[in-house]
Image (cartoon, rainbow, N blue to C red; front, top):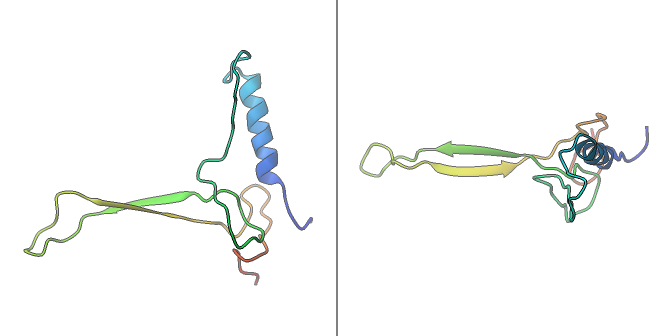
Length: 99
């Protein structure tokens, strides 16, 4: 197995081709841009997934006088995987810990 996979680039090409082929992107369209949503960039380098899906969570905080607040607090975190979603190869580098 190679040191680095190109699965995300390959999948983006397949999506781009399919969207043109099935008419989702009209032939006369210009300035077409495809990109991964929730993508990330690691300043430390290493081998990692370019996409960091987000998990959103909400909760209602307690009031000082008892009961709970009317409005919920909304937060989110990004999650990076240790393995490629498409080929299953384990990432090596500063993000994923090698066993």
